[in-house]
Length: 289
Image (cartoon, rainbow, N blue to C red; front, top):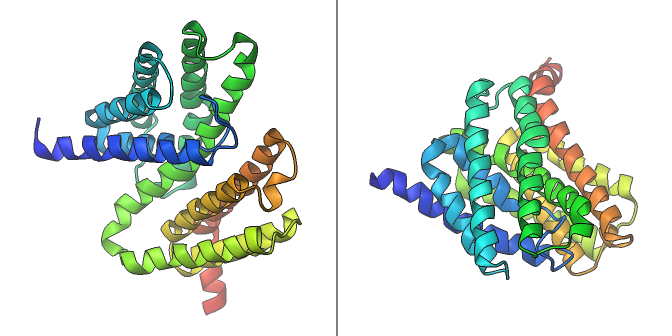
């Protein structure tokens, strides 16, 4: 195996494990199955689409280590790692079968990818993985439907949020000044921290307007890759606010909070894509004209 093939596998397995631990750390519960955003799923999908079948081993290694170090027994850990690897293989095949461009330059490509995530990839992963956990007595059969929904929900949000960002970043990295790129994320992160945690704004719609106005401006002024990055920063601030029990998204039950912040993030994702692909050039022409 060539060195340039081994490197992405190693990077993917490390990222998968580290962001898996981060996801569990920020999750509102300490169970094996969490409804929170599971970041490794988005990273794994993007790497699979970019590098193909060669990096599936990185997903297997990362998931296996993550499960074993989070109190899941060896056999179910092994089988869940296989299931997640098969999910990646299925994703690679379907992306090629449906002729989805890795550059995601059209809404057609974006929403075909979103459809695969929502209706095929995550039902596959959630259903089979939770059955495995029940078979090996890692979770209770009485909680099966909730666990499937939680698994599906957290993974869907992660893949819609993370995978497109990595794909776009990969294709535009030569044109990105990293220090400036990261500074946008830092400034926006501080801004949202002040709004959500320091000021503890409790009006959902006001907070949404304050957030989406900045993200929309960056989408139109800079490039979609900046806006997609800001959406990830937004999700991290929200999850951190939940972790420290502060801000808008901790006033209700876990399920209600999760639905509220997920809709909040999903609206940002959808608006950014529509603005960038459908309306950006038209809006620029209006202001220039």
